[in-house]
Image (cartoon, protein in one colour):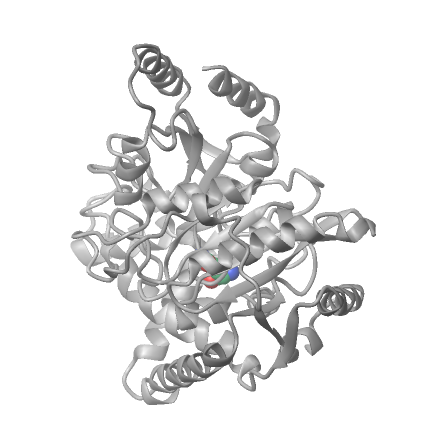
Length: 460
Ligand code: GLN
């Protein structure tokens, strides 16, 4: 109960961050009271008993609004729970509200929301990252303990990196997407934000695992991540992605700090070697071709007839579709629907879509080779720390290019994490670690080890 009151008070105090779209204050208080009573009556508490959690506004919570931060879904109410929400509630979590994000999870700064931009709690003149910017800002500013986001091309890891917290994206197929509003279905995964790795591990363990409502989830058993996190394996073989650390887009001070860090790892006796990824410059175009293609298909369902907003007037059906979609979607979403329709159109399909599929295949093959040799791969999360609001919003290409380090994990379906290990001029930035598919346990264990050894690395 105290926890709920504390977070509600913080939410009130830090309203200017604009992290939440809707807060469920009364419900959260009621739920906390009920949980307290059950506990007092001697009931065995659930794994997430009383943990206060925020949901990105693309995750369905029965009888609550969910809008993907889009005008087109205004006043839409979820008719059922996403599987992840069912599982959180079963373990007695308290859902405190829906968090702001980029419209349909498209963006890197949270400036594409119908509900306005989110501010970075560390420096309010800067972006919190995106698309799950509200989820990252809320945890960083103590507005909830844990939050869920989605990661299609970095939307959990990059905002975590900008807000100085930890952000985790699972293997594709580890967590059900049932009830999660789709952006690009072969990339989307639900991810978790927290300040403590243990909280992320526990939440993941609760929401992960096969689901009959999502045929892309796999049968792979889910380890007890939280319990086994501190088991320290030895003989880690870590590859650092050479082209990534050498890439011209990376801030030079960050480059130096990463080099110092890699040396430090070696000094501490870890086995660290360079690993090559010759396709690095191809992955951003590949990602944007494939995700916009998938988005153009996924978003065709918003026609003003079945869901949410409909343009006023009694024009004919075609005109109504056109007006609803023209005024219901924001600029970035329209840009991507157009781009996706273009790359799929006959005559261009071979030149773009098929080529991008081929690159993705090659990348997956290469990834298998890498993980036959290494247990984990490290790389940056973003080329720079959080930048000022407004500086990139009119330059989509430069915005897209900044996704260079995060989209690889999504193209290959790998689990990945962003750990807040460094700072530059008072701004946090992280280290990204990836492991092989379904090797989340070792990802958490290595993260735990590094967080313990290097938490104060930037002060050393
Ligand atoms: N920044 C990326 C994009 O705009 C990532 C989005 C995401 O992961 N949802 O597509």
